[in-house]
Amino acid sequence: ETGVTQTPRHLVMGMTNKKSLKCEQHLGHNAMYWYKQSAKKPLELMFVYSLEERVENNSVPSRFSPECPNSSHLFLHLHTLQPEDSALYLCASSQDFQRNQPQHFGDGTRLSIL
Amino acid sequence: AQTVTQSQPEMSVQEAETVTLSCTYDTSESDYYLFWYKQPPSRQMILVIRQEAYKQQNATENRFSVNFQKAAKSFSLKISDSQLGDAAMYFCAYRSYSGGSNYKLTFGKGTLLTVNP
Image (tube, rainbow over all chains, first blue to last red; front, side, top):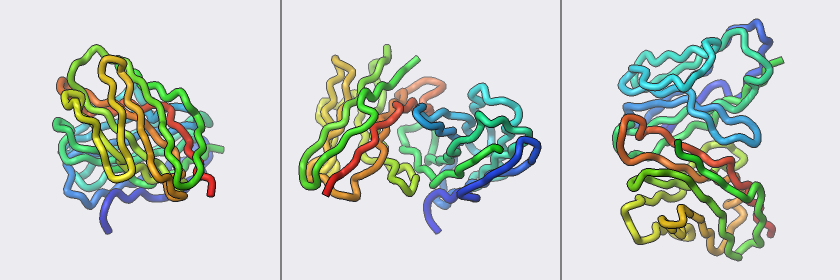
């Protein structure tokens, strides 16, 4: 596989559930990102990791917990989410976040909170 | 803070014709990058074209070209000879050239392009 792969593609969960979103990149990139895409709103940057270290937490509620065990994998752990958290969650990667490298996006996980 | 505005929520074009998508932005920086991303119904966001603000020449990628007007802070995307596969949501994005947050992409709300056969 090449590119950025996200699983699952769809997720329906209750507000009390705990689930995780997974992102894997096969591009040899050093930086990875989580974005939230809601209807009729611009993409919102949530978290940024560079070489497995978090460099940005864009005022995201603690019910979202990222994890980057290595430069190829990024997780977003979810617990006690709210209905307004229903959205498309996109993962992206880039070669190096300090240089002008384009971000490559995955297909996203469509999350629905019941 | 930078903002990106796409004033056209939806656009349509006939196959083989040309369409221009608008984007304006607000920034106090002199050096930056601008991007157009395409998100088809299959959802994967794909980079279409990018422009460095310090370059006066407009970027071109096959049927895609931009009209970059730095003084007006305008960055429109022109799609020539439109094809059915061009139907997608198009996002304009801004990125700082330097500084501690130069990895951040600021996106517009997007323009949904429909291509009619």
